[in-house]
Amino acid sequence: MKEQAISLTVQLVAGERCALAASAGLIGCAPDEPSKRFLATQTLDEARHVEIFSQRLFDLGVKKGELEDVVAQYANPNLVKFAETLLEKVSAGDFVAGVVGQNIVLEGMAFSVFEMLHASMQTANPKFAKTLTGTIADERRHVGFGENRIGSLLEQYPEKKPEIQQMQKEMSHHMLATFADRFKDGAIAEQRKRAREQAGAEAVSANWKGVDLAAASSEELQNTLTNVVLNEFKVRLERLGLEYQTPD
Ligand SMILES: [Fe+2]
Ligand SMILES: [Fe+2]
Image (cartoon, rainbow, N blue to C red; front, side, top):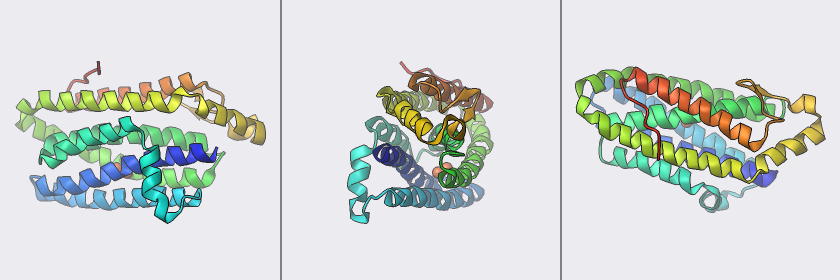
């Protein structure tokens, strides 16, 4: 169970490190002062998220000197590719694609993952649930910026749409592969089963989007998360005048 907790937390650190690098990198190519200021505040938020999830690794027994090795060992290769796809746009100074990739795709995913985790941890691990509450509040603000700022920029540069949709398609592919990896070995369902046996079904029961997270199979958990994230993508992209692209 400890190894599962470390492995899960490493994915959160990897995602937040990507958000930190992306929000910091986007400040330099933002076309207006309010966007630069917002992204600077977001950079601080992401640095704090990296810090708190790294601290969770230390709390779980990872030694300070081992942090990078543990992150490299457990970070899902598909999540690494997801991050690389986004950071390529940021390195190229592509502000519009970078913000869609970060504030709509990455943070749309993070938001739902954190919400699901929060629901499953509320009674099982209130301390971690509280950490997630703060993170969720920040992510909601970041997603809002993406929607508000990018809609008008896309109206200005409609020729950018196909390239951005292609990036979304690639990022979605890597995200779905990450979810498939995380849920495939049944370790998560096994962990929930043990928690039910130890603490009692009542104590760990957690409802999210109509699914009992403590009792659901790995497959049900994966389907629920996938459906929630993809629906969010579709709605948010549509508001920006983009059409969600289904990965191959
Ligand atoms: Fe974050
Ligand atoms: Fe964020």
